Length: 267
Image (cartoon, rainbow, N blue to C red; front, side, top):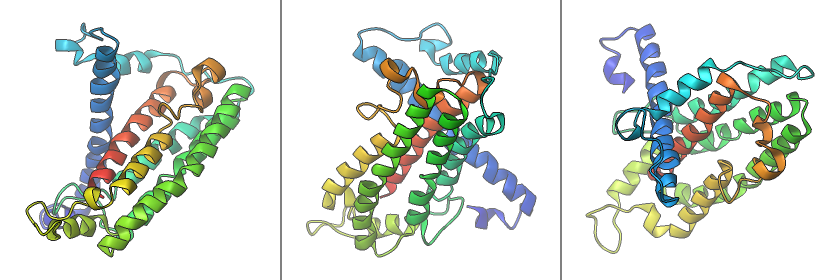
């Protein structure tokens, strides 16, 4: 994408476009997932309408929620390690921004074309563990600490099956470049037909299922929500967070879900 714009746009302009593109690539899927799944789909499953007041069919509810969080007081526990407490949400969100950097959005649309894109994505996705541990330890709250330790243990444990699921794709494609993996699927054939290429989700369906289960665990969503465990740990490592810092955790969680969905569609 930037190779096309390099002729007309100066370097600072390219950097600005990358930042803006990263914000859109992270925030747009996060907002879509929150509205469609958290607000509407769960409401439908519970035989109710969900938010309907803010905008048509509650379409502006997310903006109302963000405005509410921004107005809340940023409370920090007296015994907390203030510096680490403030840094933890940023570390979690930053891992999502770093993750989206290698996702190909089209033939000539990407932020960075890494030859080791798969390895980079798996490595960067582990950075959020540091932010979660920082949040749990710095809060000076036993529930937060237990939630942070649970989350870190779970995320590290499910990294292994995720890596093993991706190894099959790397071997079949012969590259770790996400862009080249997409091209390899388009150029291949399956069952003697090249109409749809060779999507690895068909030839490696078991690996795809393992990958999606591992992603569900990485996101600490049900049934892998022990780090949150509202009935036991209140809200886990996020217990002491409020206002804007809680919002950052919230955005990071759903933005990561969107980015992992992009990576799954690429593989």
